[in-house]
Image 1 (spheres, rainbow, N blue to C red):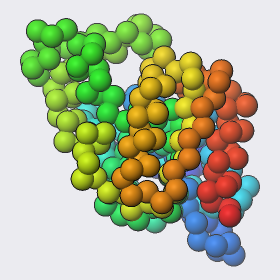
Image 2 (image 1 turned 90 degrees about the vertical axis):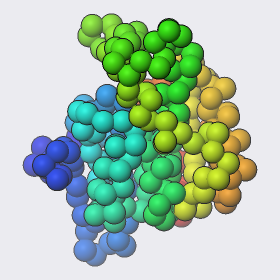
Image 3 (image 1 turned 120 degrees about the vertical axis):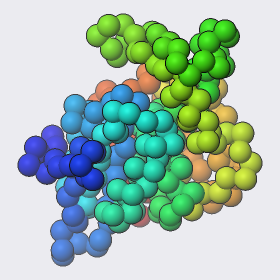
Length: 244
């Protein structure tokens, strides 16, 4: 469990948690980036990564996104806080993987672990789920069905989807990542990010100059991959990436 006394505010707008690596240990910091409308303070994955960091004498960083903005804004916030705290490794859950990859275009990251990665999901929503007549209307509020919201849906403004377009990756052959090792874990039963999308991302990264890309499909895995056996997969991959 992430202790409350390490939770602070960054730039007067982002809630974040940070622990520096112990002075006697090699200076390595692992960062957890949560998914869309997720909160690291209630995340089993964030708690797991925090405990992993403490156990292995690593620094730890995580934060919550600002209430307003697009994926572009959240990436810029992430880049600033990651640079400030000298992050070496990133674990990105769902949209967090997208943010991690965007960050790694700008600064060197030693390794990235994606859990149920949701790269370019905003464009899939726009092109596949938003009614055609509203796709160009920035003021329109689309009710996206969601089991994660108590109301049964998210209110999504179309301007959020449109303003996130500069961050799209999968159709950008010019993107280059300053990260030699990217590992992906995805649930076959993921209803939020289809498994075919994960396979497309794996192929994209494998042909875009990343030295080592690995990909694991969890047969009974859902989107969150927060069950104990799922977290064990993440821990094994993280250990391979950070400790060897």
